[in-house]
Image (tube, rainbow, N blue to C red):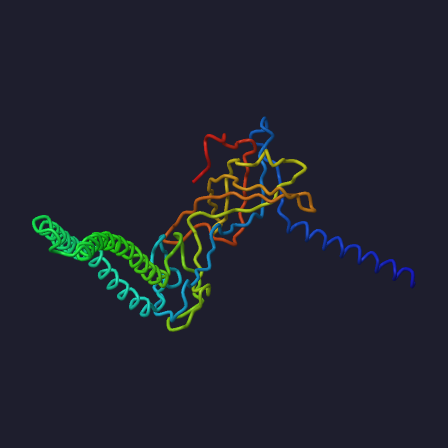
Length: 323
């Protein structure tokens, strides 16, 4: 009896392991050949593919400060450059005003040539005094001492040098305009970085912060996902299909909708993994354009789909890829 009981237990354990093993295999993507296009090796059909996002972005704050406004709420659809949120920019606005005033002063100084004109006029006076002294001594020798003549000559030369100094100072003032302009640009950039803009077209699906909270650079404010173009991932049997067979191939994505109806989408394989997994399969994905019905997206990340790959239909390199 004891032996019979042991044998029965082992039989039950074997059956249980078989059931578990069957369950694990059933959860893996299945691969079947269709009868279509048999002359080109047939198509590969991948079941239980997963629809996933291409762009899934945590929108960060770029500057520290109080989050004064959340412009885009959950489910908001935005375009590139749309304003999503605002961080307090009062200090940056004051710096901008100061930079604008300094730039205006620098421009006025750089455009004013009064110092040059003054130096030229002073040099003319010095030249005239020296020439008059020479004329006096020519008419009446030794009327003016030689040291006085030398002093007037050097004074005239000095005043001519002051013209060059004034011109150089005006050039330096011109460079100061560029410096003040750069300071103004920096202040404006600081203000712009306190305005959080959308980097892509997408939909806000989650808010991490609320108005009135303090944020640091890099703190995520919201999650933005792209829904108009999605990725469908599956696994191909490496024993039957090489990477060359599927790279760039056309695909048809089929999904089941609520109510039992099905919809198909055309796409193209855009990635083939160079790594073959332990089960002899390698990962591929295709990108497809999503559509909306009644203001809702048909394809939704996380859902399963079936992908039929038309083996050997990759486009020539000159033909390009889908946008």
